[in-house]
Amino acid sequence: MSNLDPFPIRHSFRNYRSTDAQRDFWSGLNVALLAFPQGMAYALIAGLPIEYGVYGSAVAALIGPLFSGSRFIILGPTNATSILLFTTFLGLNFAASEKLALLPVLLLLVGLFLVLGALLRVADLIQYISHSVITGYITAAALLIIANQTRSILGVSFELPPGTTIVGIISLTVQHLNQTDIPSILLSAATVLILVVLNRKFLTFPNIAITLIIASLIAGIINTLPTKAIEGDISSSSLQMLNAIDSSEWSLKIPKIGSAAVGNLAISALVIAFLCILEGASIGKSLAARSGKRFNTNQEMLGMGIANIACSFSGGMPASGSLSRSSLNYNSNATSPFSSIISGLICTFVAALFGGLVAYVPKAALGVVVISIGLSLINRYDINVSLKTTKSDAIVFTTTFLSALLVKLEFGILLGTITSIFLFVRKAAVPELIEYTASKDGDLAPLEKGKSRHDPEVSIVHVEGELFFGAAELFRDQMRRLVEDSNLKVVILKMRNAHHLDSTSALALIELVRNMREIGRYLLVSEAREEVFQVFRNSGLIEVIGSENIFPEDSQNPTLSTAQALRRAKEIVGGKRTRVSIFTKGGKNS
Image (cartoon, rainbow, N blue to C red; front, side, top):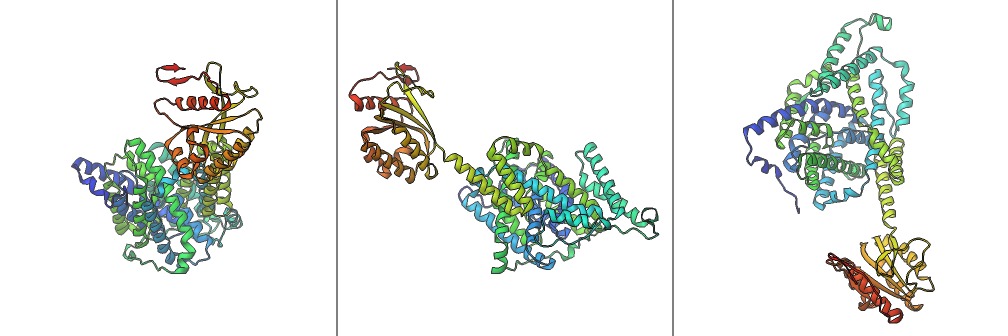
């Protein structure tokens, strides 16, 4: 558990003052007022009873900060994990009861993967995942959220067959347009208006909670009025309402682990865990940069893992770092992780005392809230950057977006990640070879295209980039073409910027040296760093090249090594002395 603290929250007790407690309380209250309705919305996205989102928000906020050590991050259900959970169960032909029975197993697997990842420090590998993967996935998830919740604002109901994609969702919605409920549409329009006004005029208010309360009051009025003016009859309107949260049924749940369940859910759990890492890391690093604090991604993974395990036993949902709640916590001037614990306690308290009032919240209003959340995920700036920066970024974004949207979200993440890594390796596997020449004054400079070397018998080649196994073959081919010059006698390889040599590149160099010797040519190595020298020593390259032909790097005088190699080259080709410039801190010496 190198660099992992088993119980980091204990550090928050040091020098904790009453003023800190007050700030944490108000921060926790603000977060809870957002977390409670968001939890309901995320449960609706995932296709679960709304209490799962509320319980998940409460438990993750209570347990996560005990082990994560982050001052600002609030754990709980998020857009990305909720929609991924929805598509996971949509892809498996499970009945509703089976889905709820298997959810604790899925959460347990997610938690175990995260804890194991923290112990193995896999968070350090996140830097190799392109941001275009995340942008493509989030954009696809946002569109899927919007498409799936359109039926809520239209007041229509239908079941989605297993494996349904966004095309199928849109098709089914269109087929059920004849069942559109006019009161639901009117209420949805009113909810949109309320939410827009609140977000423009009262940015610091808990606008989602206020919107749902006002929409519930409007729904209550609509349900008491006859609908003759709307639908041409004298019956009362019957808007679809949410089910009440009965906290008396909240109990410990034991995951029923079996080989079949684990086999069905392992890949999905791994993808959800991977997504949790990406979300948590990006949010944590952003807030840490703003606050000037350090952020330990592996420690955060540990907290997320234990939070998900806790949710598996308490009827929650996958817990990740929430951008909106974490940002609110930061902007509310939280001083410690206690603000997260306070928000979890408040969510639990509200669910226990006022959970029955949720039955007065119309599905159409919550659907509007969910769609607004989905729209907020579509970042046009990030999309433009991904599409226009480089060809590789555009390929990764498009691959992730289309596969996530048209096949499955988890497939999109995996395919996008594989594509990102493949393109990175392909780019890294192209070492850059720059030929240098020495002028009459002895200065070293890149050889301009179309011009000949000052000394046709000696070529100085600067190696730039990776020389691991993926680049070895290309490096060998480039060098072969170079040594085909009939005038050439000696090649000097400047290795200062050559990185990550391995056995494959060492064998390629051995083969190159032997081929050069057969045709009467020599290879010299200059500016060999300790890493390069170690590979040469372990692979036997020193004996093949000859120790007299290898010149280690001099950190105090970087060009000395190449100057020495150039003098050695002159000795090989004719025993003539040559004037070579050596650049030092104080100037140029000959």
